[in-house]
Amino acid sequence: MANPLTKESVLNALKTVTVPGGPDLVSSGLLSEIVINKDKVYFALNVPQADARAYEPLRKAAEATVKSIPGVAGVIVTLTSDAKEGGAAAPQKAAQASGISQVKYIIAVASGKGGVGKSTTAVNLALGFQQNGLRVGILDADIYGPSMPRLLAIKDRPELAGELLKPVSKYGLEVMSMGFLVDEDTPMIWRGPMVISAITQMLKDVAWGELDVMVVDMPPGTGDAQLTMAQQVPLAGAVIVSTPQDLSLIDARRGLNMFKRVDVPVLGIIENMSYFICPKCGERSDIFSHGGAKAEAARLGVPFLGELPLHMSIRETSDSGRPIVVTEPDSPHAGLYKSMAAALWRQLKGEKSLPPAPKIVIE
Image 1 (cartoon, rainbow, N blue to C red):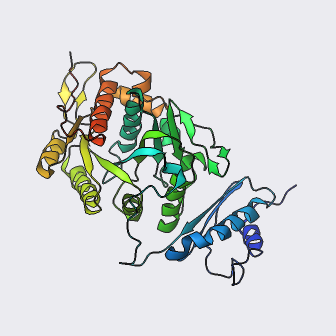
Image 2: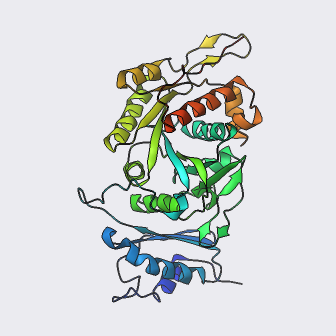
């Protein structure tokens, strides 16, 4: 019977890897915490930011060494850097990695807080782009709470294409998520630099191919991961998702201001869970208030992309991994997502005039 995989066995293996001109990797102080999930190993090397490329051979050597341990099925080794205040590298606005070099437009779908339906909105917008005839990918950048495996009912693992990972294909989308690499109930106990490096690798070390649009489902909030994505990924713009109530709008405003500070255009605001229509009596209820996001968009001078209802069909199809845009493509709700995607595409192509925000007509 094979010995169980332990952190000690990983450390013993890494002691055989020598830092050029220095000690072994374990003694060097470069090694971060090691995370083991069943037969997969994750860790980072914290290196000087200016010399990150020079450490790539060391990263590959560490990866190969751990992969050779009996019982190891997969290894992810990332390079991270703790940039000091005021000492961060200048924002990189060009596609810096082969993985995204053939992607025309990358847009972030973001929210100031969790629980506003951002991921459901992101996946249906991506499918809206796809059903409008575009080649689309979606990156689940929420390392701590990845949603795409559940929202798209994906159980497959990414395969290798040379030195790159192949995204998983579903419903015509190219998809990548940390949730494909770890079990759903496994907590990702990672510090900020590891999260940032993992997101970067899911962009540059994935064979995305030729895409018209990549939708990035951003982590909620405005922390280090979000700021780094906004600075170092060539974002064509951002979409803010909010519910109508004041508390959500305060957080959405923070997210919007973050993108403005790093010169990422805000393509618009979506008001999710805008209202509820009783399926029995047809009476409308504004459970979370109504119209706050539209008023906020007008106040801030950004486009208002429309209202999405709180509706059973959207919730049920999302929970089952069959998003409404593909399972009920002719429904009024799917029509909303496709109309919003079309409006966003017009903006990306430089057509500034937007049609009126779409609405559902209840007959």
